[in-house]
Structures are given as structure tokens and as C-alpha cells.
Amino acid sequence: MRVYEALKWASSFLREKEREEHAAEVLLLHVLEVNRTELLMQLRDMIDDAQMNAFKDMVIRHGEGIPVQYMIGHEMFYGRPFRVNEEVLIPRPETEELIEGVLQRIKTHFGNERLAVADIGTGSGAIAITLALENRNLQVATVDIAAASIEVAKKNAEMLGAEVTFYHGDLLQPFIQNAQKLDVVVSNPPYIPQHEWEELSPVVKDYEPARALVGGEDGLDFYRRFMIELPQVLQPKALVAFEYGAGQGKAIKEMLEDTFPEAHIEIVYDINGKDRMIFAKLG
Image (cartoon, rainbow, N blue to C red):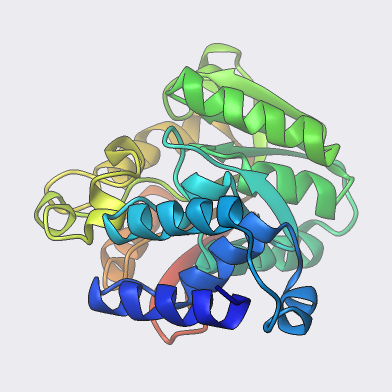
């Protein structure tokens, strides 16, 4: 079979399974070990039997619901490859926008100061590692309740050359216990309401870790806990940044206003026009 024929078959198969057809190209790039330009140049080349069998197997598995990123072992985030497996959430493009917003506000709120930054619920380490690499003035620490997730994040930090301190713990507890103060707290916590999680695509619900997705009955459990713990760790001048689910911004803004009455709070919409991020500047 030729390359273009393999792509055509895979796209048709995935369309019937109601999966993203673009996954066919991603999987074929992985199997052939080429980039997209090379793939386009090879469209009329023959695929050997071993490669075709591997490709078919991965396409069928994705049709059954297994995420492409878990099969190829990585996802691109902020222009860098991050290793992922079933222990961590697959980084999403929307979170790149959160990081961009944090970097911009650090510059305007703090200038070029050395800052203590914490990413809470690190997963693959995408937020913490990206912040550490994009701004070398940031002393970045990160926390996850799952030791298996921390191991993935540590490997990513080593692979990408980022200096990050890792804590195994629950939310801000490691900093509270160490009496450690923070200038910036960033988090993309679990925020999907339980009833919505039950209706998610099998690609997400059956394979990505529920602990990284579900935030209680209304999806806001972790934000409520942050409001208790944040005042114990933040410096008088500080920045808080959260990602959240569309439609949750008003409730989280009210929580932040109650907790930090003097804060300047912004709700920011993502590239798809959904309210997705909230930033609170203190001091």
C-alpha cells in the first residue's frame, strides 16, 4: 500500500468511529519517523508490511478510544515535546494561553524581580516547566498528589533542561507546612463537574486520569480549597492564575473577591471565545 492510500484508509476508518481524522496523519508520522514535509514528499511511496501493520494497529486502537498521545508517548506544548502516559492529563492548547497570560502579568506586575512561583497539580509538568524555561528569573516549584505524575514531570524537566522543585503533596500543603511564601500561584485544577465527566468522550473519560479532571459535583471543589489555603502562602504583592471550565468564571471571581477584597481580578476568554482563565493581582 502507498502512503496516500494508507492515510485515506485510516481517515475513513476514524471518521466512521467518530474520531478526529487528523489523528491518522499524526500516527503515520510517528510510525514512519518523518516530519510532515517529508511525509508529503513520500505520499506515493510504498509502506513496508511491518510499518503498515504497526500503523493499522494504532489506528484501530485509537478508534477504540485510546488517545493518540498515549500511543506515541508525547504531546507538543508551547513548542516543546512533553512525555505523557496514562498517569497524566494530556496538555491542551488552552493552557498555553494561561501561560502566556501569566508571563505577561508577571512582567507588568513585578518587572524583572526574582519570584517564587508554584504550579499546583503539575501532571506532565507542562505549566511549571514552560514557566521555568520562558522566564529564568522564576524559581518554580510544583506539587502533585500523585507520585506517578511527579515521575513523568521530573523526566520532562530533565529532558527539557528546566530547573523545577517537585513536591509530593496536596494542593498548597507543602508550602504551608514549610512556612514558604509565594509570589505567584498558577493552577489548572480538576474542574469538570461529576455529571459532565460521565458524558465525556471515551477518549478522555476511559483513559485520562479522573483525578486530574473531576472537581466535584459542580466542578468547583478545588477552587474552594484554594480560597482557604492561598491566604496562608501568598506574599502581600502576588499573582494568582487559574484555568477553569467555560461558565465557571463568575463563581470563581466571587470567591476571589471574598478572599482578597482589594485584588484586581480579570476574567479572560480563550481563542475559541470561551471564558477560560482568571487572574487576580494583589498589592
